[in-house]
Amino acid sequence: MAPNKLPTHYAAIVLSGKVLSIGVSGLAGCSKICKHAVTRHAEMDAVSRIRDKNRLKKASIWSLRWRKIDGEYVLANAKPCLYCQSIANKYGIKNVYYSTEDGTIEKANIQDLKCKLTAGSVLHLKHEKGYGNVIYTPHYCQKISNKRI
Image: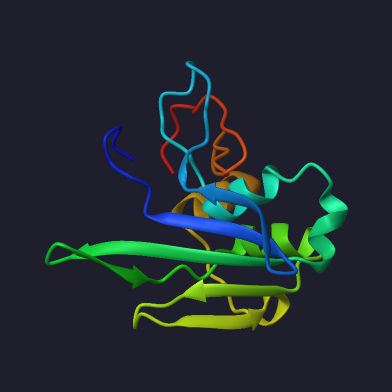
């Protein structure tokens, strides 16, 4: 994300109508050795800001993405990716509310969603299958080998 550009993807953890945390998409904060950008998804950022993870079992996650069309911000697709879905499942989050391309908000059970991989997820899976020393996840990054993937 460009330094002067505002984040376009936000997520909130909500429990009993109260916002417990807000997360934004952005860089994951890699070390200086890692020269490649790795993003941290808004959903993961929101979850990471909760100290007592037991509170997540009764919470919902709201995920909203914005894009600019003809000078106006409109809702865009913010359906969680496969990794964000797995994090929500890990901590027992049951419901997700997310914006869609048609400008509506959908509610779904997180386990029932058919989530897709992101580009970073594909790189991570290639590493797991032996295509080189590549670890790209929203959580961390390591030095990249010279191998092409």
